[in-house]
Image 1 (cartoon, rainbow over the protein chains, first blue to last red):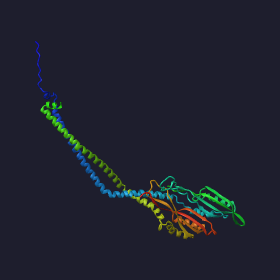
Image 2: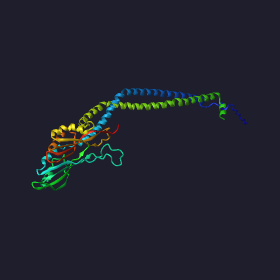
Image 3: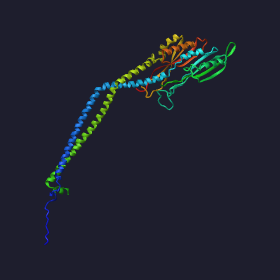
Image 4: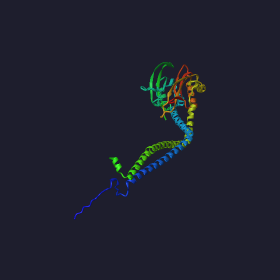
Length: 216
Length: 199
């Protein structure tokens, strides 16, 4: 005999219980509440950190303000020291270019032969400084070159060439502060002047002087 | 359809959903109006603190170096002193007249006569890098006189001894009628204060 059983499901879907031991209708609100609590704790932590950071900043600001006078004095002194160092550097450039030629000029009189009469002894002017190069709107504060070269010109009269040669030979040693070995005879010719009944010879010799180097 | 779903829910489930929704909304409000502003405030405060800490360590470092700075300054002032003493300062706006007050006794001692002083164009000095605010220059004064070569050299010897920072830029001795009365010309250079590179 066949018997068939009849199953009646009278539960509404919403009334159906889950087989899971964790009920969603409990866990969802609990989760939401816990999230709120967590966020509040997080906010509390941030607020504490904010207060502590601000307090630390206020402490440092107070310390800085207490030290500000002393600090600005140190800064002023440091800036002044930097400025003075640069000024000293420029003045040392000047000192490096100072020329001391009195002593060789004094000795020069001793080596001029008797038969030479110096009519003129001069240093040529230093080269012109170009502080406004073409194309530049504002002039420069300083020259682009730090070396200056001048010439020493000696002109005089003599009776013959040997005393002049002797003078030039004398200048070859011991006059390094006054002249270099670079020289040029600008002229050597008969002059209108006479001595002891004969025509004198005039000469002009040009020596390159040692460089004036305005640098350390 | 969602309303039907809500209506079909058991009362406990419905209550649960409402409570969840309310707390979720509270959580969003806390995040948006409390946490986020607080976080940005904290970030700002931390940035300020980091800046202040940087300034604090800089200040402390500067203050620790105060002794060295003071010593450096004293050394520099001592090194500059000979230059300050040698510097040519104008007398009533005239450098030549100041040079006259300095050089007249030396010229007189050397026996030079008819000594005249005139201002010459200044020459600039090379610049250190970076440039100082106060520049210095080469102040030049032309001295013309009458005397012998020996007197001119004697003047130079004494000048170099007494004024070691004065330099001879140009020199000329030209013979006149007698060897004792030659025309002598010197252009002498002094260190002097120049212009300012910035205000």
